[in-house]
Length: 113
Image 1 (spheres, rainbow, N blue to C red):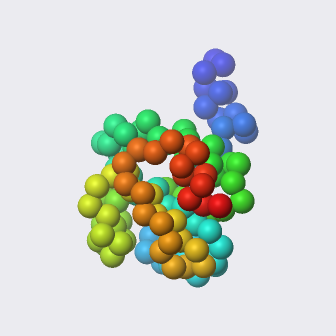
Image 2: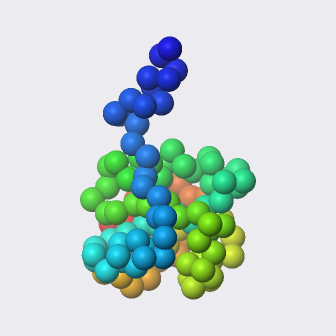
C-alpha cells in the first residue's frame, strides 16, 4: 500500500508536460526563463534525467516543462531538436541556451539562472 501512496504523495512533483503547439506558444509568450526538456518515452537517458527535471520544476523560479518530441515533432523540428534529451532555455520567449544529452543538475540550474 505504501508504494501507491508514495507515487501520489504531494512531495513528489512532476514537471508539467506541454500538450500542444498553442500551449507551447502561450508558455513562451508569458516571458521569463523557461527550460524545455525535449524527451521521448523510449529514451533511457531521458528516463534517467526525469527526476532531476521534476526537482528543478519544484525548486526553481524558472518555468520547467517537458515536451515529448515524438508527439509534438513540429516543435522539435522548429528548434532543430534532432536527439533527445535536448534542453532549450528561453528568456522572454527567445532561445538563449541549448544543451544536448544528459546533464548534471548543477549544469541545468546554471542554465536557467
